[in-house]
Amino acid sequence: MRVSVIIPVYNKAPFLREAVDSILNGTFTDMEVIAVDDKSTDESLAILKSITDTRMRIIELPQNLGPAGAANAGMDAATGEYIVRMDADDISPPDRITLQVAFMDAHPDIGASSGIVQFFGTETIAVELPLSPEECAAQLLFSVPVSQGASILRRSVLDLHGLRYDPAWPRMGEDWLFWLRMAPHTRMANMKKVVLFYRRGSQNISKGRDKLKDYSFLQREVFRSMKIPCTEEELDLHLMGTCIFKVKPTVAQVKALSRWYKHLLALNAKLHFAPMEAFALRVEEQWVKLFPLLPRYGLFTALAHLRLSEHWTMAQLSYLFKYRVNACLGRVPKG
Image (cartoon, rainbow, N blue to C red; front, top):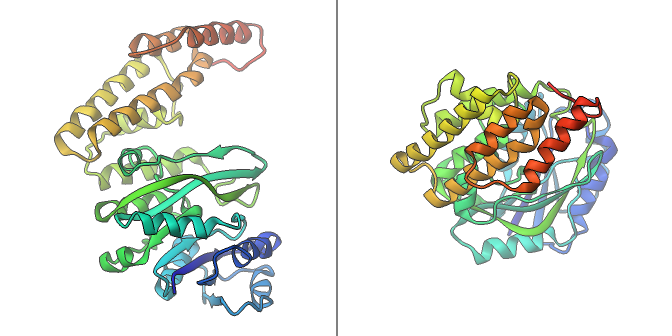
């Protein structure tokens, strides 16, 4: 069998049938669909049992283990050459698995990949992930290189290296930690094709969580895994660089962030935790992403960013002054 599709399920009854049908009705047929019910308390299990397609397998967990535990149960039961991940409230395009299997067949050095994720529901944006293995490796320090719910994995890599989720991991961000665990053993990449429609709404596991607390823990684990020394002050700077503010940005903090990024570049030259050129480009990209948020915190804070940038545009300068004028008039937030 070529593909095992793993769908962890916990209280997703309103969306579950649509999610499963999007897989079963797709163009790819040489597969099994393993739905792991994580002790749901709604009608999810009954919905799964009502599906008569012979490719369906249902695993009923005796207790709630969370996304990581449910994923592990599915991986342990999988028999396919590839494992395709799918969340129980999302929708796969009809040709998703056909495209992803073809991509993995054509790139035998790749152990995990995904593609463009199109949000729908409360947000309608398209999220594109890094394409090349080098870009994915450079991404690891800042975010996930592959979209978990849109991913396809080579089962031989997982089994050879005993790669599974850690039950002690938090129930949000376990995907980032899993890719970190997988990265030393294989390469990752992404396609420039839509492979998932991701439903945004109140049912998402990240809804209502403390983002700063979650990402502080995750970022510490990322630094530890990549063997990058980091103080609490440097952690706060790094989070600020990814637009998660523990305190308000200041001129001094913007200057300190610039020094931190230069330190990371020098450290990478020594430790080689990411490809040099790809990492330098990724650091620059993250630096540029921060600028649009800084005018809210003062003219001089944003100007400090521009002064420290290797390249800046008149459009950025115009945006800064327009924002500050509107802030003074009370039209946009400030401080």
